[in-house]
Amino acid sequence: MASTFLSPYCFLFSLLVLFSTASPSRISSLIANLSPKTQAFSDSSSLASDGKRLELPLLGNSEACIQDPVDLAFGYYPLLHSLHAKMFFYFVKSPKNVSDPVVLWVAGGPGCSGAGSLFNGNGPYYISDDMTLCSNKYGWEKVSNIIFVDQPTGTGFSFSTDEHDIRQDLHDVSNDLYDFLQRFFTEYDQLARNDFYIAGESYAGHYIPALATRVQQGNRFKEGIHINLKGFAIGNGLTNSGIQYGAYTEYALRKNLIKRNDKIRIDAMFPECTKLVRQCESGGDWSCVLAYHECERIYKELKKIVGNRYEFDIRKECGSNCSDGFSRVETFLNKKEVKYALGVGDIEFKMFREGVFNAMHGDIMKNLAVGIPALLEDGLKVLIYAGAEDLRCNYIGIFEWVEDMEWYGRADFKKSGIAPFAVDGSVAGWLKTHGPLTFLTVNEAGHYVPMDQPKVALQMIQSWMAADVPMAGADVGRATY
Image (cartoon, rainbow, N blue to C red):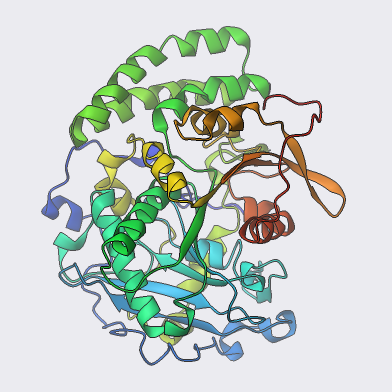
């Protein structure tokens, strides 16, 4: 179903308003989730013990469409190091084994709600065209206890009564997520010893390395409950912007979206982008804003040629009118009876908050890959995966920054071969792995792998968490991506 509302679900650079470090007054005018007129639940303490299930009468004809009801807990946690911020979350317990890993799923944006994946990706449900809630037989709760969050403050149903709680950098964002996890594992203390993983897509390529570093810091200095972090997975992420911008034309050429002369012309713009990215790495937010706008010129030139191809899935020709089913999530969560059941007061739900995006403007061009080698040294497993049909966060740029990382296994990773990733006997993608680092491309998928290839995504995360991903080393006739 096409929609003309904002198609967020990644980092919608085209929406950006140029300003450097946003003032609180400027930010508050952009954020709708400040001071809801009808007070939302103060916290989730009444919901946490066994979870609260959305009653089926609220969900139209869903009873016939839900084969495996799950306990969906939801609510707010106040954030310790904020003035009045409250983070909204959904939590689905593994129906099979309480000892399954705990997974925190982080959406992109900045400013995209975790509900997009909960109801249209790797959660237990999906929403049909007639607003019926149906079981997703490939939801990740089959192999984990999974949390979906609305973050940073102002995203989805998360809110604050003080404009100073709107975050502008990853330092504050990761502190808020760490505070959230401390509160979560305090209430769900029976899960605190479980293996813990962070996963997400798109701008989570920024969020996840920062949060993993924050968790490791908290564990090292015994700041609170020890979080048993084992690794993290990033799907079609924006992690090293400088390298990834430089890969746009190569991807477009390989996919026959542009001609070689187009590539040569557009590539001539890249040196200035590179220069400003370097200044961003050593300067402040304003230099990063300048770098973003210069580098974005490259993408805009490319888009003029690519035309109506959907940037998050080039197999589709629908331009900005592609909704990928997310418009149904927005409609569903704005139903009066659903909002009442969730206890979110009068907050209007939006899949994407432009104000949150703008507040994080100075963060976009920063390189988060630089922190990953230390996390690999700590023994964490890292899975970087990419749907092959995504232009915006394409697999070529992602693979380039993965190979560019300076870590102890870099030489052996580069020498390792590329092996097929099989699901039900068919090649679903191609992987390259050495030690704790795995890179995987997923066939027939765009930006949202769990949505486009749900069965493949479930097997991917299950195999990876179980250390069951086959080692790539055999000569399978492919040396590079």
